[in-house]
Image 1: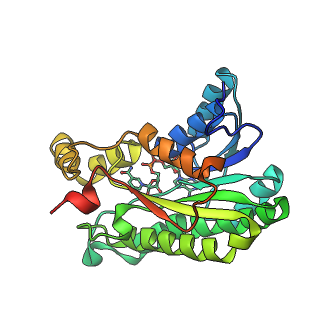
Image 2: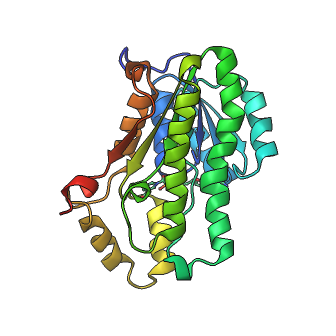
Length: 258
Ligand SMILES: NC(=O)c1ccc[n+]([C@@H]2O[C@H](COP(=O)([O-])OP(=O)(O)OC[C@H]3O[C@@H](n4cnc5c(N)ncnc54)[C@H](O)[C@@H]3O)[C@@H](O)[C@H]2O)c1
């Protein structure tokens, strides 16, 4: 049941990348708070599983299979949704490598999903939010947007762009009642992390997992649910005075690693 604080009762929320990790935790939490959640994901099976889980718990959800990098597909999905009150841009991909290990195809792939995918969803959602008199947008940046992280050249580029788009959009639509913020997590234990450990450190996954856990002064990675809690706050009416901000949620990574 939705409580009175942080209630999303009668709101329509769109969560990209809602089939896995942080997006999945957001979709489940938003549904518990009363929102109708539209799960947008490239992975049909995962999107359907999340929607099924929400419906089994008595919530409302709809799955949409979409590649956020394709503007036509994205616009068509948002036209169906019609009145998105909340947009959470969580779909994203990673790449490990410094400049010299970043071939053009990897740079383009990261740009297409993390930068253009975010832009496409903003492009489709904002006119609908304007028509409805406002909305709340949450973009997924990263500590990599503001701190030099080793071997994350393309990824850092993409998250810096997400951060800058957040400020630009917040400024341009503040009078239209649209709030736009971003968050910058450090490492969060999701399939995203497991996937890149398996791909980039085969046979050394556990060792690297421990190493990455210790880079957060708090001594571990975040849980997706901890990230979803901050996102709920920023997208709720309780955060109505907050726009154009980026919130680190990083176990002390940015300020305490000295
Ligand atoms: N996990 C971390 O440590 C961490 C830290 C900081 C920021 N982030 C950011 O958080 C976001 C979510 O990460 P996660 O850890 O939950 O990852 P995840 O891999 O668990 O989930 C990402 C989801 O996005 C979907 N997706 C990927 N490309 C897509 C596309 N083109 N169109 C539609 N859907 C697509 C995937 O199918 C997947 O369901 C990403 O933007 C990531 O950069 C993650």
